Image 1 (cartoon, rainbow, N blue to C red):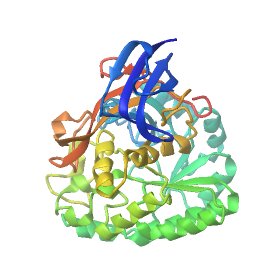
Image 2: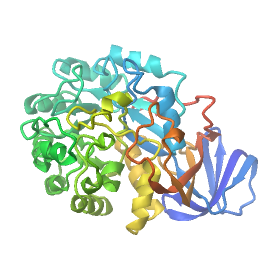
Image 3: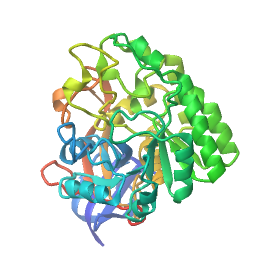
Length: 438
């Protein structure tokens, strides 16, 4: 048989582990796996040698912001950054776009904005806000991958939070995955204007996450719904999560690269590029997150890519209270996590499980996030031993503000293929995905 593409690597990360292999592609899918030196007829035969071959990453937590706040970020720039970072599938959050994705009409508006502009495949979350319970079934049928809710102020007025009663009603309204920003508004206090990072962290204490996770667990326990805790930063919530899963609660949890790589001790006062919600915490907390990731308590690692206009970060005043809370890292997530993972004794198969297979399984994309026959030929050539220094000018998201500026990271994405075609940034070929149809 003649194939469209064969990619060979001595470090291919397959579901069975890392080994030398040749991956043969036909009609956009992986058609065969063979030995590294196997004779295979192909239009293009690419030999990566010792450069690793990974499945394309799946990032289920990305704020693209288009339409409505396209000056913050957009589908063209966000997906170009994703491809440059080895991410071949992303799922867009229902805010901070205007309108937010809380009705079918808003979902279609967003799809229209994305069509023809995406360099990677893109799916969409729906949202739960006061007043839209009647829209959830229709949104589910329209192909969203689940529903996001905030228990605390989201930061934008058009996406207000829900309380425990409304969350439970939403969980009972439709058989879908619910992903929750779990911070308890009763434990979060207004941060005073201050350039001191310690003041900001104190305003969003670990207790806020512990209390909110307990609320989510209780609602899931009573309804039997499937829930997912977003961007866990506080390891103090882990015992509640472990106990709930032991009791059969349908519960998963994610964390983010910044919680695994950055610590409160290293955040300079006034450095508002480090602000995110929930906040980056101390080194001991970070060690506990890594332990939970290693033992499977934490299911996946996703970026929570949340860019904004540079002036909204308030770098001029360094005021953490006024600055927008979000870190834009979809392009850097892989090297950030790999740099830390290898120092802690983890291998590339672990990173693939956390950042590709795990997120794909979370949203039911069984043809993504793995190098397996029949899966989409979404592939990444990853030079795991190469190092580079982060230069903001080389980042592709719209406004290259980053807390990683100047940091030395390990792992360079050399090439990305989407369904067997190289992603070069000049011809958007990403598809818009629907849950149940992808």
